[in-house]
Length: 336
Image 1 (cartoon, one colour):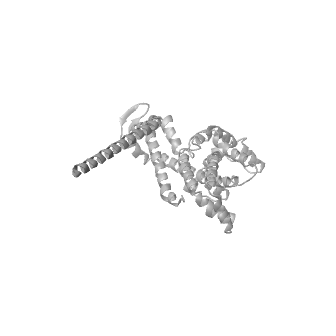
Image 2: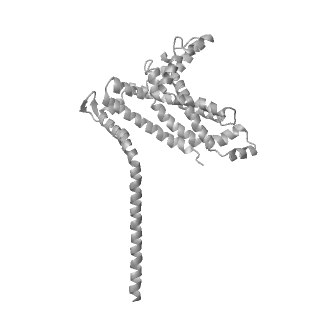
Image 3: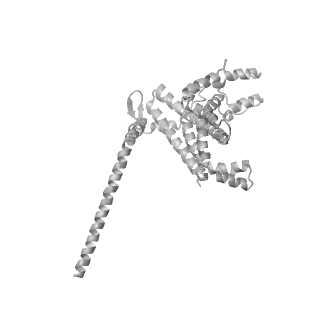
């Protein structure tokens, strides 16, 4: 009798446990279903406007495709890119754009943000003034800067004339800046050491001006997350302002700097509006980045399949650059 009662008690406990587990599973299933229901609009949006176009673009890149679909060529479009000199030149120009723009935007952004973080009079007005260019259309800003760089009657050349200096071609100058400097010193450099064209440097100056406000705002947010107690402790220990900036501020801002490096590099490799408005890829294709070449191939030459292959190679380049940043720069980021 005791044994029967014990077995009955064990069976009842097992039934209750099974019911409890079943209830937990049903509740978890309902929670998962509700979560996917909330995610459904975003998933539908991403599928229609991101995933499906990307998959269809890859499908197009496998064909010889002009105005209409022609024959299937497989990976031929990708193989042809390996021997396309224009494509590799455009990659080099895109890399120059990243090298010229991103470090300058980060350096100036950090310096100005650090100054605007101090308790100075009119700090809010200064912050607003620096952020205004960022909310300006890149097309409108590019048109204004194109007028500033105008060869005849442009503001910059007028300033040079007032200083007794010769005017520059700016956006119409295809020579490299290193080559121009060497020529002014009476020497010469090889073509491969000519550097980016003056037109590319001019475009980068406009981009730095335009995106500087974004970097300042992000750095201000990062500075606001640093505890003031750390600064007070450093000053008590006798650290100077430069030591505090170097030993406290910079390490604690490394996650912010890393974020800006990643997003800025990706954005710079996809720059289009300002380059199209200011130079159209010229002069002599010295500002024709990869995206400009894709635009020319895809829309102007209507080589849709070949242009799609270029777009996917650019995507691969961005992924590789991002992986390199995470692999070699990300390990130096201080998250403590």
